[in-house]
Amino acid sequence: MQATADVTKKECSWSGWKGQAIDLLYWRNVKQSGAVFSSVLLLLFSLTQFSVVSVGAYLALAALSATISFRIYKSVLQAVQKTDEGHPFKAYLEIEISLSQDQISKYADKILLYTNTCMKELRRLFLVQDLVDSLKFAVLMWLLTYVGALFNGLTLLILAVVSMFTMPVVYEKHQAQIDQYVGLIRTQVNSVVGKIQAKIPGAKRKEE
Image 1 (cartoon, rainbow, N blue to C red):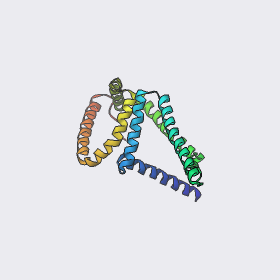
Image 2: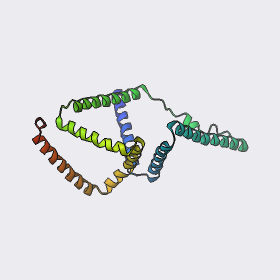
Image 3: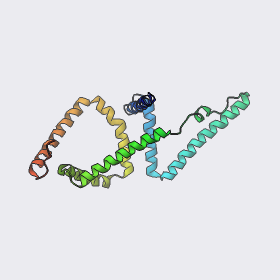
Image 4: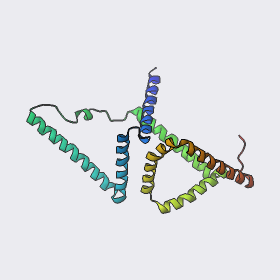
């Protein structure tokens, strides 16, 4: 019973985080999404101008300046008003932030699962278990050489963040039109792949 309760609790926790992420990306709360979006973009743009060490140091100094100033202000205010409200950050200091053994094991298992899956997929592609999939992978790598020549990693990361906060909303508003065009593209791609499979010996998939 205890194990079942723990699993249910973990599932609810994961569902809660997933729901919060969806709300964030779909701008259910405009202020919250705007704050996260602008903060992440500011951080990434800062990294394009300064080193990671400098950005981390400046962020730490800004946070310390804010907390130290607030602590001094509250101490002076308590001294003037002769009150004893205690530490201004007491509620946050008492929050448990350490990871439990179960949480560490859960995340380690997930990382191990993703790593093994990735290694098996790469082995399948590089050793040409399926010729069509390996050709698709080769085309993707060839396209990425052009992408890498035009953008660096931080630029791609910035574009990814912008896409994460804009594309879900655009898709939600224009889902019918987007699905129609995606269906047409998928049909054309499948047609081309079918022709390639028919012409290249050994490219035809085995019937499952």
